[in-house]
Length: 216
Image 1 (cartoon, rainbow, N blue to C red):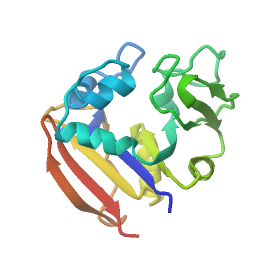
Image 2: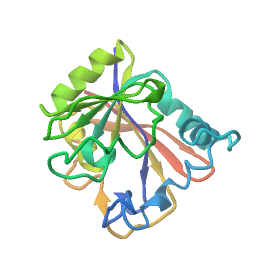
Image 3: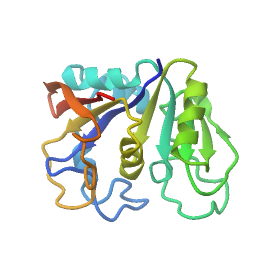
């Protein structure tokens, strides 16, 4: 059965998934990029996201590879899609990733403001869902055609799906960095009561990897 997965979700030692004061210049907030230093050197990131050859293999790269396996569709929150707030002023913003985004699958973006789908190179099409998280998941599962759906974030979006107990698997990559403030993943969440348990842990080259799964 198709699962909803969160993969390669970077977290600081003090529990933050993004720094404060997010902006176009600092999409992950102040110092927020520090928690992603584990993924940038990996061969999968270099090749799939940057279109370059080379990169590091190893335990960290293994988890990045796993994150893309058997994924037939994605869900993103609007804040992860871009910095634009409120009604769309025009159709110029098409995401952070250039003309060929790394998804290579349908991507369903949660928003309160309608917008026509955007077809990009490499098989990525962005669809904008205004009916909420359940509608986005239903559409994504239909598009995935039996494969899994990957929930990309950001923090508020992941929290909504966790509260609704819709996330089947959550992979956290805990980076050896402190942010001090920002967006905390677990604020207001009782993961134990929600039915999540740690089923796997591993130490990578630059991060500690933890897999939580739902028992419900």
